[in-house]
Length: 247
Image (cartoon, rainbow, N blue to C red):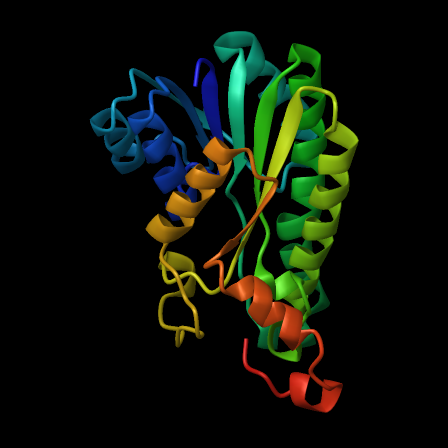
């Protein structure tokens, strides 16, 4: 951890939890990039309590694709080298509304897929240029086999999962690696008020698994690990049964 850790989506519970664990492991320089970046007092305090020495806040709008290259270039120029880039932004959206409102459906896909394609491409190019670094990408089991109950969000995660997997292969041999994280249902702010699905986890559990995978050099991690064999079986469910499953 001899470089800066960048969290794109600096207000994210999972992103903050990952960053604080990296601070405890010796990372000292952090950039928290988010909308309303002046309102990140709690996140900065958590990092400083964990041992961070430098915490910089930067304004980041994931949906503003044109700003991505400039923002990441500024981060590398001012705070480089960068050791880890965590893409922790995203929206769940409203499935029922998305089925009626095409603009809402597109906005979910834009944030959860298109914006990630943009920012990951810029970040990968910058890390290639410096010759090292790690990208951490949060996919979801919702994208492994898309369910009728949340197919808009799930389709975006399916696209992101495929893009990240291909990018990981493209980065092979460059000195840059990509860790793909596939959590199940995460009990947190984004899912408040929803009934937890089986094998749910917390942001802290996702962060623990993510950092353990970073340290061990793994390329993919399921959270919790039991979801990997579970979804291997769920892929085989007949479609009439699959379409009746909840989100």
